[in-house]
Length: 517
Image 1 (cartoon, rainbow, N blue to C red):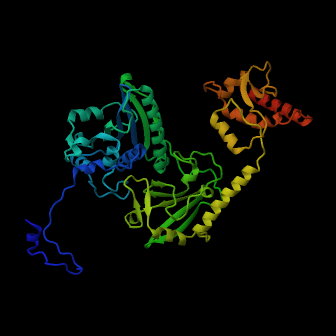
Image 2 (image 1 turned 60 degrees about the vertical axis):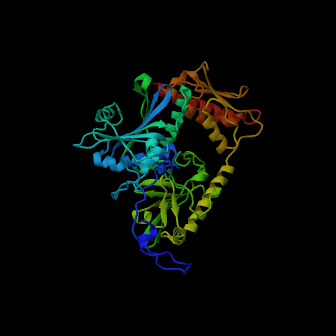
C-alpha cells in the first residue's frame, strides 16, 4: 500500500501554510538494524564495564562476586564475573539477554537502561556467555556472538551439561549454588600476542584499575559489608589459581579530620519541588591518604560533585558548570544523593555507562539558593574551601628546611618528604643503611659518609617477619631520619648537638633492648 493510498487522499497541488496537527494513517513496524550492536558500549573502559556487571550482581542479591582472568598459552583467553545471587530462570535469562530488554526495577536496584550487560560486554569482547541457576530451576545458558548479533538477533542456547560444569568449577571465593556466571571470550581489549610478560603486566595493571574503580564506585556497599568482591587469575597450564585479592572500599570522603571547622555541612534546596541535599566537605590540605589521591588523576581533578544513586557512585568530581575547576578548590568535594524522581527528571540524566551525570540549568540555580542551618550558602562553602587550601600552603612554606633524604627507604617515601619539606640547598642526600656497629647502640651518625647507620643486630626485630631489603623498615628509618637530620646541618656539632645525640642513642637503645627481653 502506498502512503497516498493509506491516507485515501491525493497530494496537494501546491504548497500550503503551516498546519498545527500532523495527520497520520496506519502504522508500520521498523525493526532496528542489527548493526546497532556495533555501537552500544562504545564509551566503556574495562573497569566501568566490570562495574556494570557488578551492578547486576547486587541487584540479584549477591553477597560475593569473583572477577577472574583466565590465562592459557601465555595469553588472557577468558574473563569471568561470577556471583552467588538469586540466579535466573529460562525466561529471566532470555529477558536479560534481550537488547534493550528493560524491565521494572525495584526500589533498591541499580539497573536503569536495560543495556548494561550487553553494552559492557560488547565493549570488550566479541563473545558473551551467561550461565545461571535459580532455586528449584535447572541451569540455563545463553551466548551472544557479535558476528551473529551484527547480522541478526540470534542468541545461542548453551548446552545444559556445559552450564553445569561451569557452575561446578572450583571458584573458591564464591559458591554459586544459585547465581550467575558472565564469561567473555574473544576479548578485543586484551593483549593479542602470546608473550607471558606482556600478559602478566596487563593483568597487574587491569586488576589494579578494577580494584580502585570498584572500591570507589561501591565503597558504601563494601563498607557496610553488603558485598565482597575478589579478583584472581587462573593459569590453565598450572591447573590452579593465584591468591584472591579482595577489593577494599575507597571512600572519596574518608578523611580523618575535616579541613575546616564545622564541616561537613548540609546545604538544602529543592528542584521542581523535590528536596535535594548537598553534603559539602572540605578535605585537609596536602593529604596523602589514598582516598584523597584517587587513582587515574591528580587530586585537583577530583574536586567537585559526587553523585550517588542508591548508594552507587555515578560521578566522581567535576562541577557541572556550577563552578570552574581550579587548583585552589581541590579540597572541595560535595556528595549528592539522587532519588528516582530526580534521575527520571529532565534536570539529571546519567549516561548509560553510569560514570557521569548531566545536569540542567535548574540544578545550578537550585544550588545557588541552597543553605545550611547556620546560613552558610554554596558561595560561602566555596570561599571556605579556598581559604583552607591557602592556609595549608602557608603552613607548608613555614616548615623548617631539612637535609635531603637519600637511599634506604622506598622511593615514594622520598618523594613525599621532598613534597612536604623543603630541602636545604648545597647539602648531599643522607642515606640510611644497616651494619654491625660493634656495640649495642641502636644507631650511629656518620657525617663523613653522609649516612645514618642502624645496628644490624636489631634488623629482624625491626622488620619482624618482613623480608629484609635495601628499602626495608621504612617507618623506623624515616622516624630516625627526622629525629637526627639536623645533626647533618653546619660543619660541626655544638655542645647541645652532642648532648641530644647522646640522649637519643640512650633512649632508643634502651627501648630496643627492652623489646628483646
